[in-house]
Each structure stands twice: as structure tokens, then as C-alpha cells.
Image (cartoon, rainbow, N blue to C red; front, side):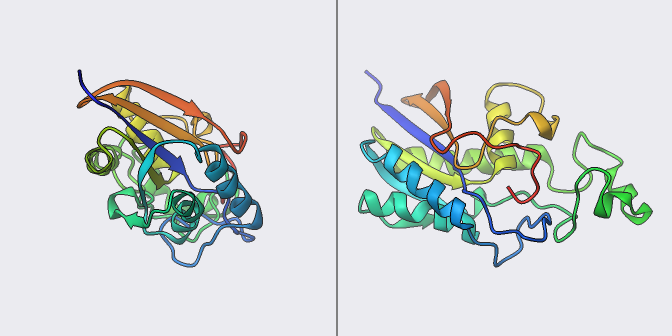
Length: 210
């Protein structure tokens, strides 16, 4: 019989972002106090899981989210650059609808193609790099469980890819709350199901800085 391996994709906790900008890959964005509590909540929720491998995006918020989970399982946090946030030309800007950068005509050419998208890393490239990170984690934790800390858009994009859905989508309907788990269950190399859970509760996918 094939061995069962579970790869959990964990979105990082809430980030300290008082200026409500799109921080993307910018350095220096750490977890807020609430985000630290969310990370601890997840660590408690998965304390009895058979996690043998913890890996995170190189960004500070992901590393901080991974730390208490790895500590609870007496593991080090590995880093995989493929789990990083999507590249975005609006980094450092306020991008709420009707506010900030989106009101400035100089930015409008960046919005010409929402299907690729034209303002950032192509969805298909996000999906492919995330798949590489997932397969590496599955191999590292074969027969057990791996936990990968990443970001909302990469997690949601690779989930849609695995579910054979179109990659462009309405960001307001992403099912990927802060500190949520998207768990990929494999029998051998075959993905047999995807399970979504929110151990730290539901958050609004539209909130900038989340």
C-alpha cells in the first residue's frame, strides 16, 4: 500500500502594518502581537500531528510564524525561496480600491491584463514554484507530515492549480485566512484530497496588511 504524506500550507499570521501598504517582499515586516498569538494557536492545534519537516518562506513574517511550530516538534525551520510572496509592482503603495496608487493614472498601464496579471508575477509561475516546494516537502516528510509557511496569493494560486481551476480570480473570495491551513493529502505521489481549516479563526481576504 502507498504511504500517506500530508503537506500543510500555512499562511503566516497578521503583520504589523500601521500604514496599510502592500508590503509584498519588502523586508522588515514582522508579525503583530495578534499575529504572534495566531502562530501560537496553530502550534497548539498541530502539536499532536506527526510533523517531521517545517519549512518557510524567507520573509520575516513567515519565519516568525513557523518558529513556535518547529519548536513544539523539536525541529529547525528550513527555508525555501519558492514559498515567498508573489512579486508585485505595487509594493510599498496603498492599493485599496478607490485609494492610493490605483487612483494615479501613471499606474493604470500596470492593470491592463488581470489574467496574467500584468502588475506582478504570472500566476502560472507562482503555481509552478509552489509545486516544486510542495514536492520537496513531501519527499522530506515521506510517510509523515510537513508544514510549509507561505503567503495568501501563492497558497491560493497553487490550490486552484491543483483543483484544475483557472488561476485568475477575484481576490475578495480567496479561502485563505490568516494562519489558515490548506492541507494536501498524498497517497504515494497522488494527491487524493485537499482539506482547509482555520485554527486561528476567519479573517477578511480584502484587508490590506493581512
